[in-house]
Image 1 (cartoon, rainbow, N blue to C red):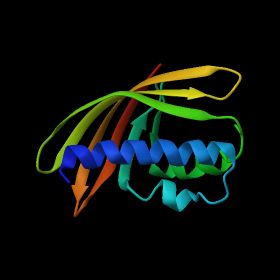
Image 2 (image 1 turned 60 degrees about the horizontal axis):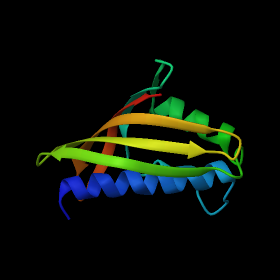
Image 3 (image 1 turned 90 degrees about the vertical axis):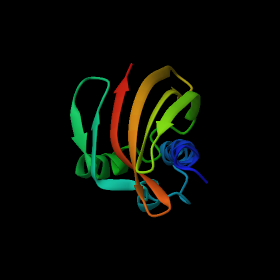
Image 4 (image 1 turned 120 degrees about the vertical axis):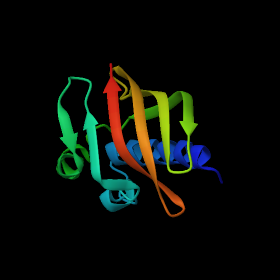
Length: 125
């Protein structure tokens, strides 16, 4: 599978995992969610705050089971790939049954063997 397809597959996998985590699905683990994240991961949240891998690891336990009716949908996944990295843009729609949160995201992935790892993520509302 080419790098672009791997990165798109990883975004889809992550959204499925985080949806289950928000719902409280006990078969999903934090380690599984973060399996394809670089230790150098960084992100900019919609509010402009900057986060890193340690922040993401600390945040996950706080939201486990918090949104039992959560549905996460991806739209408009587009990207560009080289032999070593991928840039994706996509729209993520989170519906928790009480409201909808739409995030427009740009993500950079780096190749690690056969995997594409999350390196940078910028989310905008």
